Image (cartoon, rainbow, N blue to C red; front, side, top):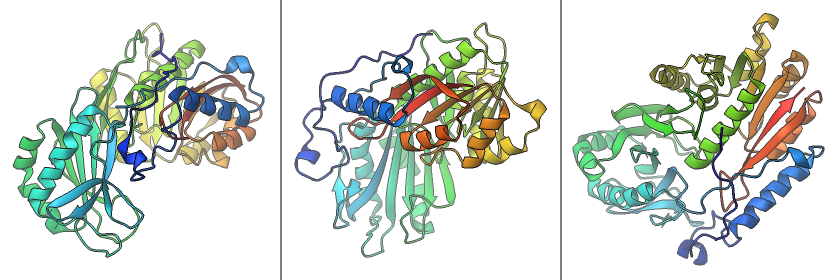
Length: 398
């Protein structure tokens, strides 16, 4: 299986007026050449994961230096009829970032149209210092084929009703919108969403991820719901799934578990043996909605993967010895896996583990709790250019 090209680009992001003017400093490393950024991330991982042989490190997977984000989480600021879409400044006022160059071109083209639509609704942006207003956030996600998912976070039922009534106008404004939802967040607190989600259009956004020269069944469409998690860099996520599939094919286990599986990216890419025969694959994810999405993707692709809604640690600790797989994939949040799960993996007898981490510090801690495993191969994935954040995946062998 061939992987996406990983040569290091030499250019920096084109001149960013927002950064230059001090209006947005989110891309803290934007003035550092992209190759130097990625080299520093590689060095950081090598320093943290001491004991990993130099030969185990594969070349890092680079990202484009612009147009790479498939999801924008835009704070609504400004005033009624003159909204800003971007971030909040230190004074709580909105900073408009509609021309941010890290967003995909499709998202960048959609933001001004969204702003015009929101101006026409007459809904007031939420004012954080004053704790009043209606419009809090707009999320825009773009699939590789150009379809969009729009998600509005508002404070009251009245705002939901107004957006629902103007749905025909919104669809005319953004005809690529395949999914539109409204999330209700009435509380005055620093959270990004509430518990209630109302779908106005569609059900899920199809993220078609093609893996070059992949084994049969590896090209799948992941179904994203408005509240689903997915990596914000589609090209690098595709490389990450491809690398995991290559490692799995090399080990060729008869069975595997994908813990913290989300919408099933790893499980679905690893559901068949290199010759095409079905592999016994089980994905475990605490979100029931994500499990339903993964099950739909498996059905649509004709893949044999199974999924279960459960806490990853509780599931593993409750499994009988006869049900244990030959390989486990873990893809936890930044905090890493629990100490209990690390201890279970250490004593389980499972011979191989693939650990995909967005936080090398928690990865180092978890590996220290699993001393029977050695890193056979490791790779850095530049999921978040112009920041210090990264994804690193390791193949562990007992």
